[in-house]
Image 1: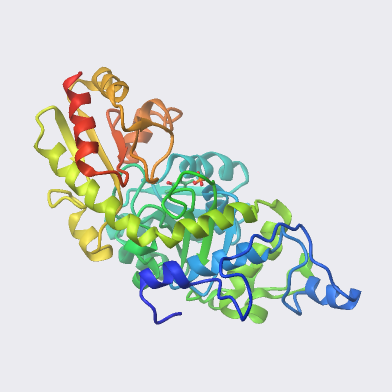
Image 2: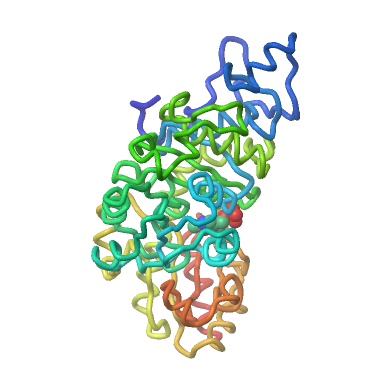
Amino acid sequence: MADYKINTKCVQAGYTPKNGEPRILPIYQSTTFKYESSEQMGNLFDLKESGYFYTRLQNPTNDQVAARICALEGGAAAMLTSSGQAANFYSIFNIASAGDHIVSSSAIYGGTFNLLSVTMKKMGIETTFVHPECTEEELRAAFRPNTKAVFAETIANPALIVLDIEKFAKAAHDNGVPLIVDNTFPTPVNCRPFEFGADIVTHSTTKYLDGHAATVGGAIIDSGNFDWSKYPDKFPGLTTPDDSYHGVTYTEMFGKGAFITKATAQIMRDLGSIQSPQNAFLINMGIETLALRMEKHCENALYIAKALEKDDRISWVEYPGLESSKYHALAEKYMPKGTCGVISFGIRGGREAATKFMDSLRLAAIVTHVADVRTCVLHPASTTHRQLTDEQMIAGGISPDLIRLSVGIEDKEDILADIMSALDNI
Ligand SMILES: *Cc1c(COP(=O)(O)O)cnc(C)c1O
């Protein structure tokens, strides 16, 4: 499978039925799995044999879907979680605990910003936020002796800043820690962060991977490239025996699978944010058309962004696919096939004009969502980011007049006509 290209992987990776087995990945709707002897079950518990025993730990449907996403990213191991929030939390909490420190891009999803700045802070894990466009010196200055990871988004939601992945990977590696990137917006079809030095990738599969706004879910993929055993004092959870799991030392027993095995055997076991096999099945169906959909999302978004750019009623447009974008060069480097279907822009006339515009749209729906086949629109300042101060929003690259438009796969002329008629209504 490793040699196939991305369209082929979208359709074929993961589940490979044997002779006489179902063509389509079955939904293993079962909490548990039967064994003939207690001894065998004991070996499974000790991680001496691999096999299924309880769906909170592993389920065959989920595993095949994780394997497909793993193949798309070019990783070594992967797991599904109940949401993107759980994926980001687990990816960090797997290697950081009370007293530790994280360096994070300030331009990230509002939920992740709260996770780091409020909830994980309460757990004793502190985060220093740096702007993704900071200098190498500013980035270096953010590290402390107890820093355990660097976190960022490959395309920031909703600021649409493209991450300089190599700059962040180098800073992380110079400080002996992994770079974790949330690759939700470009998807592995448009960007494969491992090729540029990222160590761990997370996804909110709720977005393009599902693509139909049907399921909330997440995924964590490990490249297997970060050498935890080189820094045993930094990552004792991976490099010393886990007393809560029969003295297993994850790096010794699982090599490139160490990070994901620990996240499953310890963090998922104890916190339990599993994805339902039903949802995993739906994600799997979604991924089969991911490459086709991303191409259309990007074509439509560029068409709309170009039209908005020419319109006097629009004060600014940000879309990394536009040549005028500050992030176009980074987009060309890291995601040459296209970026994503999300555009952000401001309307002249401030908050009032923005509200009137939103309420006049007929095809584009106002929803707290992005990245599905239907065009949708959101004003973050009055919804997803309302708990942030103006300063926090601006630091995250989001101006209070920002409208986030998630361009769907409808006919682009229909989407544009809807936008133009709503602008006429202001
Ligand atoms: C939506 C989103 C999340 C959170 O994912 P959920 O599945 O809603 O929990 C995290 N990161 C990014 C970039 C997102 O867009």
